[in-house]
Image 1 (cartoon, rainbow, N blue to C red):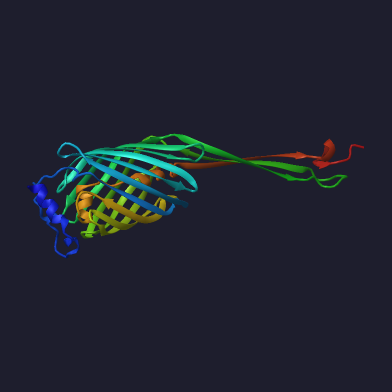
Image 2 (image 1 turned 135 degrees about the vertical axis):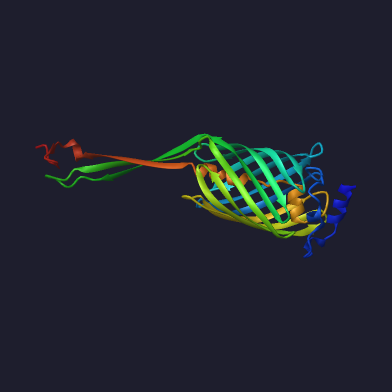
Length: 312
């Protein structure tokens, strides 16, 4: 009977009303399934992270399991700095839709740069709901590989005219870029507030690739069709070094019932954390360079006191 009451409540389009939705008035002792029926979302986005262009798509499918247990599978693909990337992630969780969520999370991301840069993540996941506030986050261990590329260039300065010409110089410069994703702690945390039932904003923290950043974002949703909803979103990062960026796009939600954004995010699909995992790779970038020089004279002419001279 409880589930029927929730479905009937969100079937209407009263989500835009100024009064609190019935969902927010449910007692904390109420229980519903971890996932309110099979549902999903897809999104397309573009922007800049760490001074590199990014564009891609990501999505999630959520499945109800036994009672308070749920499962979500995420995937993403796109281009970062004109190199392809892909991600797959999973959430296994317990949830009471009016209280919160506890679960485990794993993610695997590969970027087609320098032969393949990889980062994996294993974490605990938690959410807490209180009125218009939501706390959500993951924290655990990230790990990965090392990938590098070396670039060399040579410059030549010809020797001066004889006799007693200045020796020529050959200079070879070498630059190496390396991603070394170390095994270390990471976290991604949001403190979210719903200004209306279909508009939220958040402030949060990211620690990825050994660097910290402030996370900011907002999302606004409107109904698209029966059981469908579309939203526009924007996200930003401001942190250490090049741990920065801004991107945005559109999300398309589908599920078993009409409901406002606040209910979708607490009854249907947990947050997708995939895009931020790319920072674990680019934040692990190191650059090194070296150069060497040698002198020469035309026609193997011998040196004498630092000059090139005729051999006769």
